[in-house]
Length: 79
Image (cartoon, rainbow, N blue to C red):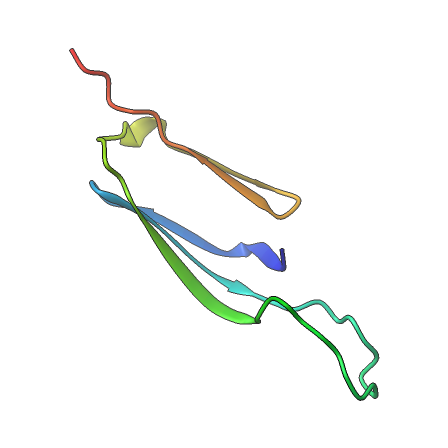
């Protein structure tokens, strides 16, 4: 939540998938309020996921809809 598609960057190497982005907090309370609570922090983030099997880089597909990022990475076919 809070991440815009234009604020995401994905990169794939032979052995990892990296996701970088910037999360913005929605305006939840009026500017003149005294207290508010946010369980998600605003700012830059980065996650790297180790790939334990080779993936077919030509068939990798990523979609982003309604705040959900889905990355499909089919395995390389073993002869």
